[in-house]
Amino acid sequence: MQSILKKKILIVEDEQHIAEGLKLNISLQGHDAMIADNGTSAIRLWREWNPDLIVLDIMLPGIDGLSVLQNIRLEDEQIPILILSAKTTIDDKVKGLSYGVDDYMTKPFELEEFLLRIDRMLKRVSLYKQSTQPEKTNGFSVPAIYEFGNNKIDFQRSIAFCKGSEITLTEQEIKLLKLFIVNKGKPLPRKKLLEIGWGYTGITSTRTIDNFIVRLRKYFEENPKQPVYFKSLRSVGYVFDHR
Amino acid sequence: MNQSKWIFHPIFIFILSILALGLSLFLYIYWYVEASQGLNNLIEKFKLDPDQVLASQTWVVIMVLSILVGIILLGILLIFIYHQKTYQLYRLQNNFINNFTHELKTPVTSIKLYLETFLKYELANDERQKYIRYMLIDVSRLSENINSILNIAKLESKSYKGEFIESELVYVTQKFCENNKHLFQNCKIHIHNQLEEPVLYFIDLSLFEMLLMNFLTNAIKYNDSETPTIEIDFKKTKKFLEIHLSDNGIGLEKKDIKKIFKKFYQVGNPENISAKGSGIGLNLAQNIVKIHKGKISATSQGKGKGTTFIVSLPHQK
Image (tube, rainbow over all chains, first blue to last red; front, side, top):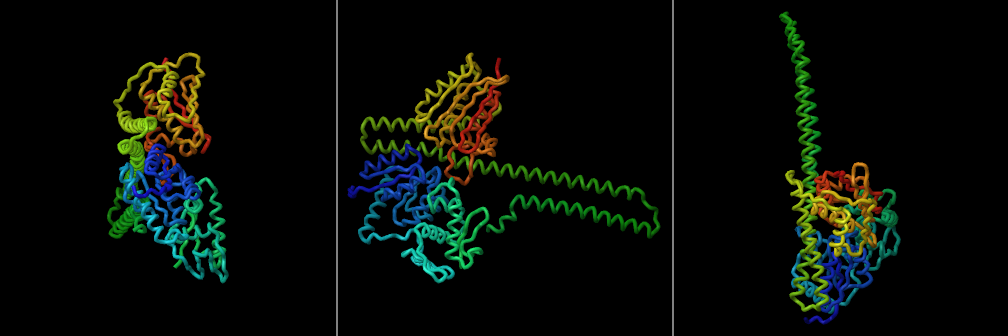
């Protein structure tokens, strides 16, 4: 055990026994662990507690693990995340990996393997942090400057140039724009937008989304009444696309 | 790929074959009428003996053709319905396999995790006790899952008769809750008996307990309240003994109430991966009640307003 440094690990798992077993082992390894038993509290703890690593289950009540993953990846590309799921098909794995998970283990798992993988992930992050200055990461692989039509978004400075003027974007606007850009051409249901963009479950009104889209259209569309980029899909949600 | 898929969609094929059949019926009749017209003309032209039989045959032919086409249509319809049913069953079954493997894997994962932890570390005695208790709960969860899948097959076979013993149902229920206390921590179960005389019925004890287990675990599993509460009432009506089991859980929507007793059916979107459970519990419950010649039903005020299950057993004396 070379890494005496105490790390913070967030366990997102709704099965109490498994969660406690994981916490026990992580504590015995000399790290700190906290348990989130649903998606909403996972996102909240990630923000407030600022963990160094996340162990994530996919099947969760409320917001599922994959939405939690996407929500986090919109803001933080670096934090190592390991999925620990009973879903074993290659499709599930590919889905998880494509959303930006670092490692995928299936249940039931070997304890030793799990601990070694976690150890390795933590070590890699600390090595990486030593060699580079910690800087504000961009989240998902979105270019620092993104252009579509006559619009230009500068993600580093949170500024948009559109219709000849300069607009300062809020954090939420940046997040939603990234979500749209990453999913360019793919329809995004309102529910998913709420879950990933805001970390809400479906109970909250989807009106929030509609109001937000109105704002984005006002910024970026030539004619907000006849949108070209942020299009509505009847009874589905929205799709962002451009040539 | 996706764009050409609709050609193979069963509904499309179904409509297409109906159209083809309708068109062919029309053409048969049309051509037949044309041909007989031509024949008539020919007869007149050559001043042959007008054949009376031919004229009267026209309608017979049309009728026979129509009946035949009708039978074919019926056949297509039946095949279509069967196909839809099979497909639905296939989807439900797929759903079931996914959910059920999850239900099996979760306790196995937990047990394995603790056993490996015990091998790796020397834990303090009280800690060890606590985790051994966890493992025991997981083992009972696992055996329950295995039992329910074995039982559903057993109950479905017509030859199964059950072993009926006369029992006092209120006592059986109380005893059951006591024996399984460890499963119902953090929740309240109240048993009310409005009947003065003892509730003696011939029941299959192990099946009855399974029935209770299903209802109680459902009431806790599908519950967002801080303390899940279950009220069990015993009532008598003219024909039945009714057992009402009310919870303060997530409730049911109207459209789901009838479907929940179907095998493998689960409330909610099949894509919704957070759905837990195997979808056989209530089907099993229904089968158990059927074996006791009783009826089962559910009522709910709607989402978030709890559910009441009513088991009605016919009076036996």
